[in-house]
Image (tube, rainbow, N blue to C red; front, side, top):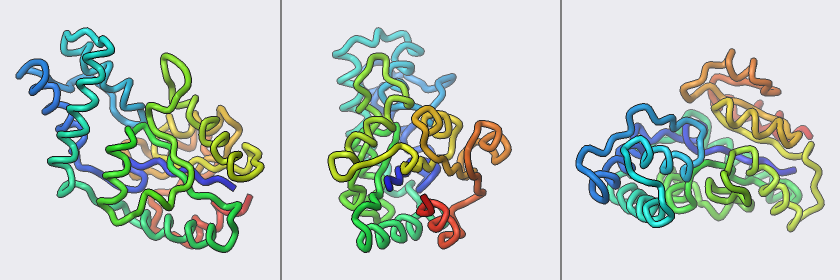
Length: 231
């Protein structure tokens, strides 16, 4: 079984650190008036967010500009974000519970599936005391094999990576996230989906989107872990 955790507003919150880092990078690289007003961040891929930010600020999203913005964002985030990052209720405990099960049953594999770049995603996990190496399958926001990338492309990447470790069926994969994008990408690949209403999307909206189970928080670790592992 493969269990793929989203990061932002599922395991942790950054209290706006990512947006501030992107804005700081844009101001330093392009224009002092660089802003993120009107650009949607929740549940989206960082490469798409960066493209939209450049466009919204009147900057052509050329390959060079996109690469510069990515580097600038990663540097700004590493310099400023750590004090703003906090774990969400039950998140660290739930990851540890799945990791404990994985040690008993190697076919149970904890992973991440997120819109983050690897550099910022691993930084966030370390900031709440989680070792990124315990997530044996890692799928990042720039891992789509298609252009333009979408979040729906990412579960098949994770499933293929799991198959490098074990024979897998998509029905044995669980996506855990806080947005309708997380729900939709899981359903598109035939995965079970657990949605948590710790982000900006309420429980009813997540249920309406088709999540197999919706919880308000991850605080009931034992019950949620049982559901994730039930197969």
